[in-house]
Every structure is written in C-alpha cells, then in structure tokens.
Amino acid sequence: MKVTVEETFDFSGPEYRRLYSEGKGTAFQAPMWLDMLHRRLGPSLGAKQRTVTFRNEADDSLLAVLPLVMQRSSGVMMIQPADFGISDYNTIVCDAERFEQIAASPAVLKALRETLRGADILMFRKVRADGFDIQRLFKGARESRGENSAYAFDIGDDFDHWRLKVMNRNFTKNLGRLHRQTEAAYGPYLHKAITDEQEIRAVFDFLREARQDRYSENLLDRHEYFDLYRDYAVAAAASGEAVLYVSYLAGEPVAALFGLAGDGEFHATLLASDIKKHQKISAGMQILYRVAQLRHENGHKVMDLCLGDPGYKTHFRPTETAMRNITVSLTLKGAAIAAIYHHAKPLKNFLRRGVSNVR
Image (cartoon, rainbow, N blue to C red; front, side, top):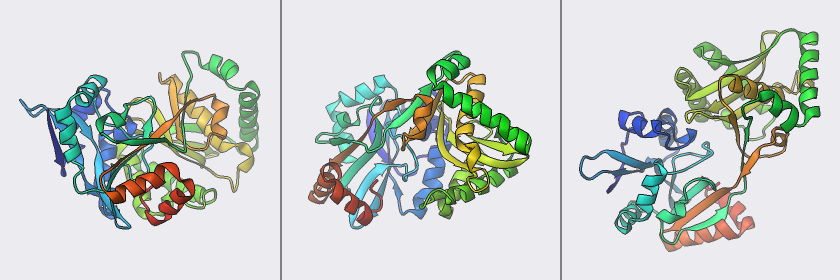
C-alpha cells in the first residue's frame, strides 16, 4: 500500500466520489462539502491542503483518504482534519476492513507518520467514540474526552409510537396545540424542504439575521462562512447532499434548519427561529419535530442533532455518543501544547485565545 500526501487531491473527482459512495465516511466527509471547504475556506484561513491518500501499489486505485490541512497559528505548526471548526465528525474515509489492514501494517504506519513531517502537532479532534480508533494509526497518540457529545435519535418504523410512547407525551401534545393556535392566529403554518436557488438565498439571509438575535458570536456574520454555507446549500440541494428546511407562517419564514445529509442521515447543522416576532410559538422546536416527521415519511428513521448543548435535545430522547480528541506530539513545542490541551482546562482556555485554531 502506497501512502502519499496529495496537496491537490480532488474531492469532487470520480475516484473519491466512488470511495465515499460505498458508505465510507460521515456526511462531513461528503465530496462536495470537502471540496468547497478546501477551495473556499482553506485559502482565506491560511490553511494548506495536506490530504493523505492510501493507494494500491499495483494499480494506483484509491483505498482510503485522510482529509487533513496544515496551518500555522501563533508560531505553532498544526496538522488537523479539514473541518475549519464547522464539521462535527472527523475520521479516515475507508471501510472497517481497510482500517484494520492499515492499523496492522508497520510499514504503512511508518509511511503515514512521515506525512506529518514539518508539523509540531497533529490535532485530530471530534472523533466519534463509536467510530474508528484513530489512536491506532499513530504511535504515542494521546486522547481525552471531548467537551461536547453528539446526540441522535432513532424514530423506528412507527412514527406515532415514537411520538406517543418514546417522546414525552406532554411535549408533543403541547407542540400540536401550539401549532393549531398559531395557525388560528396568523394563518397557514407550513414546513418544507426547499431547492430553488433564490428561495435558499433568501432563507439564508433570514438565518443570519435570526441567529444574530440569539448568539453573541454568530459565525454567519463572517462573510467567508456565510457564503460557504449558502453556496453549498444551493449546490447540494439537487443531489440531497445537504437539505434546507423552512417553516413559513402566513408566507413568511419563522424558522429554518440546514443540515448535511450525504451519508443518508440528516445532521442538523444550523438552526434559527424568529424570536423577535414569534418567541411564544416555539418555532425552533416545531421545525425540529416537523423535519423529523418529514424525514420519516421519506423513509429516514435516524436524525442527528450533532454536537453541543443537550438541553433542548433531550425532548427527542436521543442517544448520546461521546467524542474523543486525539493529539500526536511531533516536537517539544507540540508536546507542550498537547499537555495543556488534554490536562489543564484553565490553561486550555488561555491556549484557545492565543492559538485560534484550537477548539
């Protein structure tokens, strides 16, 4: 097996699409998403593509991919997964059999280690505990549990059983009552996925404005992130690699939910509702519930609420999955960064302020 850094690797090309289409990787390793991250965000954030490929030596066919980038921040040279802080899950893109083959080969692991040359540290964050054990690929790797867990719920075959028996019955009853009262007071209350480019652009303007009222640090206020999300939503709508849902009340948007769906599951990534005009109608909870219903009607049983605050997510009775952060120290400077990152939270918070790429 040949291990190489390919700095111009094409994530939109047929060989990666073929590898990914075989069920390898999460929605955050989907072809169009990774392609746009590298082309749109990478240059603006000073990141250099550092994609590691694993190929068959006989015919050069693609066997596995590690989507990495290299960035310098406050004098520290880091190699990290190509997520730029906006992908929830990082992993190597391959199947379980290939992962075992890689992890069991000293020659392959030695070649993989060589691809890290020139960096102080490898920081491989946001690894699902139920996914591949990335530590097995790097001798001397250190691990600590991530501060945020992932939350997903499985509706099963019967939506009504899930609604009445699994979820809190008072919660779903109140949502239904609120929905009826809202329609009676304001007019038609509709929830749907949208694919029209102009409609997507208009709803993203709504998303940005609505999130300004809720979050002190609104990522969508940064034009490079806003443009990426919006343009990706437009480009991915036809294929279903991403989906934008919107709730319209009397023809006006009151909530929107955007998520990646390249692996067949919907991963709720951006959520916002109009709390200025309609705080009392629970528009954010309504759209989550209605999207779950719409997805189930189309044959999708699992919905991922992704990382972060479990408060509102508990209403959906989700399963919690722990996340792991892994580091590989490559220099003394890298070892110092790793020690702080894993073991000293006050110093870690200081590190975050000084080294902006650490999360």
